[in-house]
Length: 299
Ligand SMILES: [Fe+2]
Ligand SMILES: [Fe+2]
Image 1 (tube, rainbow, N blue to C red):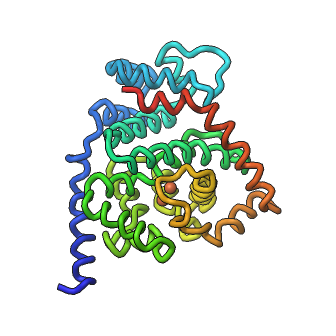
Image 2: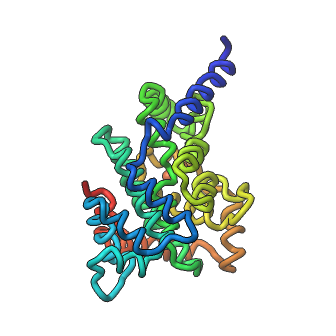
Image 3: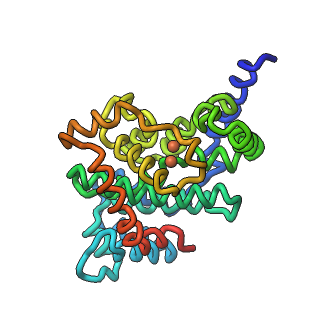
């Protein structure tokens, strides 16, 4: 078999595993119940409240998130019914879904996967910060998309560990000659952005989040809302500049050259000074969002 055929069969194998994702990467049944209630137009707040309250762990985590500095509510939110009213159905669904995904992959593992989660949370915080900087409406989908932008990478590292270790060692050997992205295609025949898209679709994430994750390395190729994936792209870059990355800096693919013109469509004259301002704001944001982030990981 030649190299190309090998690559095609590796890609096929990965897609087959992903096809079984709903069975092997099962989200808790309470999350499916949340999805079900949110998707029905006739559902009441009471129905959603009852479902969440049936799971004490989820209840605790949602209350911790609702009371974190991320939302900045002045009054303490002490009941789920109150959280449902102030956060809304969609936000509660996004929180429940993304918390479950984090827990699904949150195994104590390699240094790489711990660094990748640290990177993912930081990109979540940075994506929200950039969206706000570009005066987009404050919405939890920005944090969630940043948090899950590299979920495909997490999947590949945990479900294809041998190939993934090979990828990391080739990068270490060859240094600047290879970028992570080029190697990923050479070894797996699929990118982590594609893997992320398939996973999030199978877990029924809203289409705007799927789209943003799918195009986080190529925002200008998105067919809808290119600014959203551009926010993640920029967040990824800021975190890498800060060294919050599982990969060594020199392996990072440079900024997509279409991204700055895209950003300038919503913020004219966006330039290096804006990047510098965002970089210094990021430290404060990461510090401020600590309680929000730890609520996602609480067992
Ligand atoms: Fe990525
Ligand atoms: Fe990333």
